[in-house]
Amino acid sequence: FPRLRSEEGGAFYYVREQNGHLYSGSPILTSLIITPLYLVPAWVLSAYDIPYDDVRAQLLFVVMERLVAAAFTALSAALLFIVLCRLVSRRWAVAITLLYGLGTSTWRFSGQALWTHVLSELALVILCAVFLREDREDQPSAAAFVLAGLTVAVAVANRPQMIGFALLTTVIVWNRHR
Image (cartoon, rainbow, N blue to C red):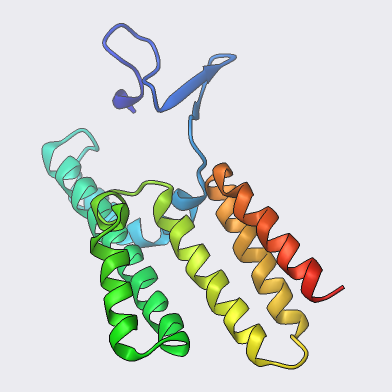
């Protein structure tokens, strides 16, 4: 991978070198989750013998990154709309969802490239849906607790700064269900 080293031979900012090996400088969970979406493009490149440093491959990488980021961002906005429809009127749900999607950095950053924000935002919206469903039940199921835990784990593993939300989730669950 020629793009992992600068012209001077040192590692770029997004990788770190340790004991002669190169490692990602950021969490890899988003990359692992989206890997299946890249199987067909990788097959196309392989089938037509297009090297990764070819301009066509680079263009495909950029297009795929933007498409996947936009799809994940749109999914988080759609799920947010569904959650909001249970809490407020449809008109307010549309307004808040539009504000989330267009009035925050969600579309500016998350919808344009595969930053760690993309998966973390989706995880938070799923967590809201789990809590909302839990609120409507007299006794939440074990599956709700497992899903809430997995969602928080994904958010933190993907973006360590999400530990604050993990702690908040722990406090909420602890106070409601001890």
